[in-house]
Amino acid sequence: MANHAPDAARPTRPGAHLTAAERPAWLEAGRRLFAAECRFVFAAQRIDQLPPAEALEVAFAGRSNVGKSSLLNALTGRHALARASGQPGRTRQLNFFTLGTRLVLVDMPGYGYAQAAKAVKADWQGLMFDYLRGRPTLRRVLLLLDARVEIKDSDRAVMDLLDRAAVTYQLVLTKADGVKPAPLAAKEAEVAALARQHPAAHPEVVTTSSESGAGMAELRAALAELAAA
Image (cartoon, rainbow, N blue to C red):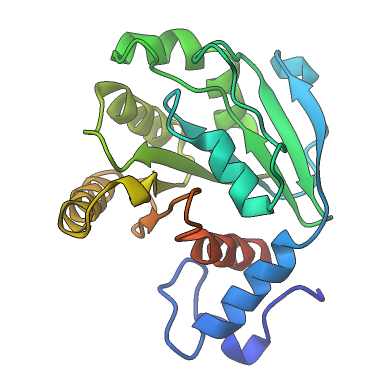
């Protein structure tokens, strides 16, 4: 496919840490992938409303107010592609966005607004879990964690749920511009250690800031690598 990185520059396996030689090619592949038109195509509130499972899907999940809409907008370079609800925790649907012809981005409802694991059950045990467990084209979930705050019980509960659903997920730190370098490094180490404790978690953590743009090129490259696998 035209948007794939050159074969000679591909990592030896999907998800492998990029070497210095591989990095420029995958950064360019990510830039080209996300330069494609991205548009809203579907919203589903019930499992029987899901669109046909055709293109590879990557879902975005996280607690309410974690910065999910901002991350989607920053990744795609669209200021209003995804819009946050005026009432956190209110949205109860899956929103599907096509990125060219190669990738579908799925915006999942925020969870855990009450900052308790029981909120995960109320928000996610119905449509969300059915989608995670049964969607054949779902390749990865990006689970967003706010770099400025401690990991919540609801985050841990969702990680357990993703493990049970056998869905590969990758932890992404958001709002990193609000954390000084030393505490940020400690947070990255803490989250990386947490990922190692979960069988379905991808080992690499991506640190981002929608405000400064930090980490966006790396996350685009990771998704381009995923799409090319």
